[in-house]
Image (cartoon, rainbow, N blue to C red):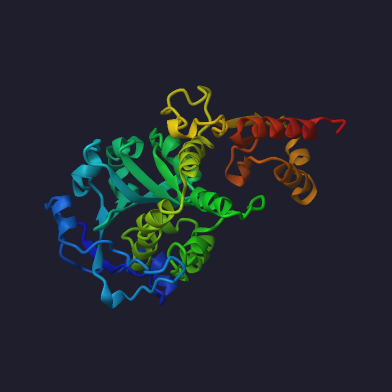
Length: 381
């Protein structure tokens, strides 16, 4: 029987002894009463909301005092019956907004997805792909592909790639907080430098959105460097449970803060870029024909001839031996192209694909980036 583990909503600042996290025989579980069998809506109604305190001043640093707020149950899921029916059977009459993340070993098309985290208003579910297997993840497919379930995630690209190639799941209807952060910065007149992406730790620490330090994240990263198989060990240690939960527990709260800042045009950019980021590393030979259609430009933006330009994803093949020319000495060539184009230019890196460049942005800027990249590949360049 998998326990429901209660943890309070604040990120813990005191970490456990790290040796306990990597030794499955020393994993510690905190017992607690399970609400399994109760309806999700009924249980949600019995708990105060929101489960993370709102700051009275958008510029004020929210203070998370664990003793003042209800404990958030964390359910380790090994069978689909432990998940809320509203999630397993999504519908337009019951739209959901959930925090979402995945953990694994070298998470990408060739890695291993170990845990999928789902943060609901009243509970966090750790969907155990190691114990529950492919059948459990497949049970989540309707929700992960549904337009009625909004998945709030920070940097969706590799999670989407793992779900697609390992389970045939096309992640859909995401709100990527990394994209949302950049759009808000742009709205407020701050231009982002190339490759200057907000980290999840940085987002949590920003008082405009959460203002919570996440000191244990670096410890988990250290453990992952020491032992890349960290997320495969069972039973899950208390530190593993807490780290997995802390990666999603604040996402619905951050989502609400961000939605209040984004204007109509930025909301469309957020939707279409999220869809393109989900496709980014999921390249196959069918040109994404089996994926859901991209969000269309809303009618209220089609006024006075000032509608935003269509955004696309272009995948550029790099001939063998030419990637060095594209990147340049110490990255100088690719940085120069990024600085010249208002488009996102991404490469697979160590996780691959190693022979492709991915470009996301307005059509004209994408075409400009393509031309510059092809120029870098020419022998005479």
